[in-house]
Image 1: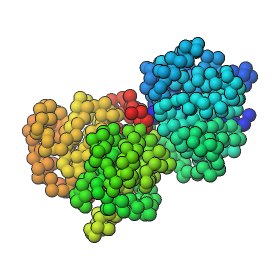
Image 2 (image 1 turned 180 degrees about the vertical axis):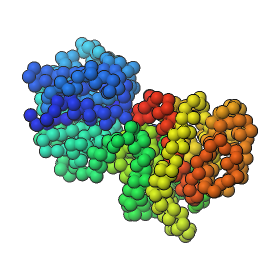
Image 3 (image 1 turned 30 degrees about the vertical axis):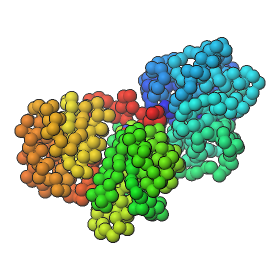
Image 4 (image 1 turned 30 degrees about the horizontal axis):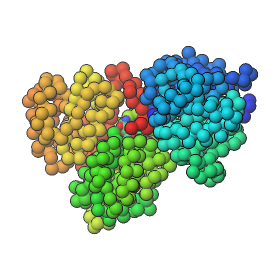
Length: 609
Ligand code: M6R
């Protein structure tokens, strides 16, 4: 969940201090973790490694880290999300060996570090931090001391390490090379003629190159200004040329583009992202997925967080439209269904990053039992789509804000496209719904333009609340779960979503005057009963907010405020209704003085169990 970066350029090629480049790259990785930051470079005059690191976000420690005065052609950097050891100057990366001639940055977890640390300490190694990472430079040091070259030391080290990790190392003895290894945690290489990069994610180096190699598990090697060497633990040396891909993301996509936060930019980007998704969905892949779904014994859907909510929307559409019930579960809870997984079943795994470890494990557990798997992801060649039988990409462009926004709406669009195609093959007439789905880019644009100001007002009003409810019925329930998650994770306001009918069975006890309750009313058969639920809340003097269909008059008198949304098919409504929810949460967070792009304790991609 940390971000790592490394770059090595031919001598005198860089036009600015390497520290300034590392800082920019780390800023673009900051969404992965931001409790401390550091970098290391080889000082070519003194032939030694210089390490600078500190607790805090990049902007807060820029002066201390003195990026502008770091000159070299080779450096590695790190932005941390603490797993082993609290955020502190000592635990910040890079970590070095005893002689400070090896420096390492690492993302992930070394599971057997306690055992390894014990052995190394007995051999006389001195540790300076509480991290699991620090065993890596000391292990490398052991092998180098025994006469091995860094690449051989790396190979031997990998044989010993257990866990999920990606790391980069520099050695004073190999002054132009950055060594790397990847096992489960993501790592990509950026290739250009005179400079090579490695990073946890592509946007880090996108301003320099869009030619990338996505590393696979068990791969290790090095980059130098003019060479890329990759070896696999099982398969030996890899032909690098065959692995280079040119990606279509532009540097602008990974910048704020005039918006104060990535989250706001990404909310506004939704019409475009939806358009891109609709235009680029590959019909061959959709048909493969449909074939698996309609011929399956059972359907399992799994994901985490926002992606799980998209899965619940798909679950609802599958059963209500096709009468195909699915078992939808939070990925880390796969054990509940493990015995039920079997040949002839299909699993749909949804993950924006494609790297969420819980979802990856659930996918592997399904495959172990013969389940055919379909991955829905935004990141080409990431672990989950790579390991699935069918990979379908949302192509929403990079999402940097920690809170998922455009990836949620494009996931639903992708899932609905698959389900509507399945419906057609099963003889259902879904032409009207499909044509509405195709209009979501336009409709969402209109919704943002028409309602952002009102959402700001509601967000401000909610910013004083300690707690809130999000209520709806039917497909509006996962939508409400998503609205509540947004408010919780970026504005730090406790929010719960419930099926509105269920609120009377306990939760309503919390309601007192001015308690905010956000209702989503869709154009479905729940209308009457939902109005009843709104009235119940109003009778208890709750502050009632309604997201309601246009022309819905009867309910207005029971609402303190409302946003009237286009009349659309309820199956598609989550794509549109979630937009005001995202904006409300965004403005609540900003009113409370929080940075919505970097919510506390969170990271964009969760690569630890
Ligand atoms: O990359 P994934 O879709 O697998 O990530 C899943 C969750 O970690 C993610 O949706 C998380 O809940 C977001 N912070 C929600 O905004």
